[in-house]
Image 1 (cartoon, rainbow, N blue to C red):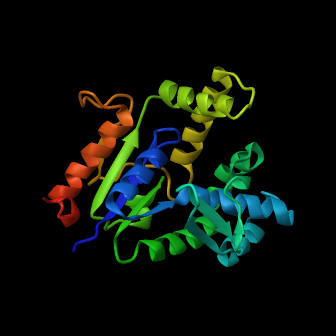
Image 2 (cartoon, helix red, strand yellow):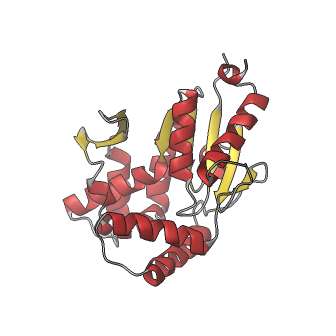
Length: 235
């Protein structure tokens, strides 16, 4: 049975994690959230007191840190750092603020890209991030570039934060999204970019009658999987 390698890229808030997680579940594939890996390095750096200015120290950390993904009791993916469950710890505002600049450090990226490529070996993987189709898995069977408008991505992020009890304005979240976009697309090492052979999807609204945008995107990708030979979807 052919097991595909699926790369999903796009800017923050486009719905990559939701789509990738759902897609992996339906296919019985492993789901790899590469953003969580950069968050894990940021979290560990905070624990060890390594400042952002110490690029060499952060690179050494990324080279030695052991990051693993495991299924949780409720079906949600768990993130383990050196054997410790940090699933919730890496989602704090402090870690979120540090993860993007940490991800721009070339040595950190090289170390984690090596781990990500190893995870993608053999197929049966849905991997999402910013540079999966361009750098990490350039030979992926399917490449998706998923995006949405700044306003829609900010709205989704604002709803997520307020539901968690955080007090922040929609305008501030929009500003953060715009700053993140600029940082991700202009960094020297592996900037956010659409691979030439990727399929562009906009999650603002996918015209599939009776489905939510996320469901529409997932079903579009499942149809592509059938075309590319995923036998479990071929009846």
